[in-house]
Length: 158
Image 1 (cartoon, rainbow, N blue to C red):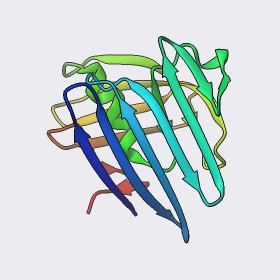
Image 2: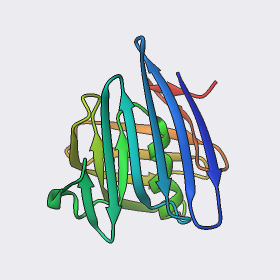
Image 3: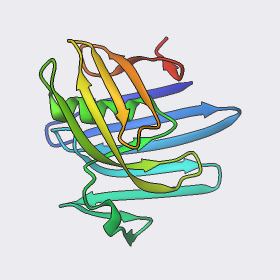
Image 4: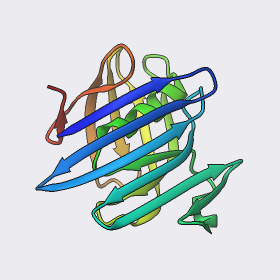
C-alpha cells in the first residue's frame, strides 16, 4: 500500500510518500525538476536512511560521489510504481516511440546500482517497460497525468 502526495510548483516537483510492505513502513521524499528530472531522494526504512542527489550528472549516495551512476537521469525505487512516472513524464514519447535510459535503481535492501531500461509508448495510456538485461518486462497503464494505474502482477491503484 502506498500513499503519495504530489505537488508541482513553478521551479520543482515535490513528492512525499509512505509505503507499507509486509508490516514495514518506508517513507520517502523526492525533489524533481519542473521537467521531471531527478534531483534528490531521502528514504527512511526503520532506523536506516538513504540519501541520493544528482546535480549536473554527478551523483552522490549518502554523501559519497558515485561515478558509476553518471549516465543515470532517473531513479527507480523497487518499492514504488511512482518512479516509472519520472521517465514517462520527462521523455514525453510519441505513440510508437521507444527510449533507452539508465536509472539509479534502489533495491529493497537500499543498495543503489545503475540499471538500463527501455520505455516504449504503445498508445495514449500504455507503455512497455523492459529491463535491458532481459530479466523483466511489463506493460503498464497510466492515467492522463502519467501516474501508474496498473502494473500487472505488482501494483494496482485503488
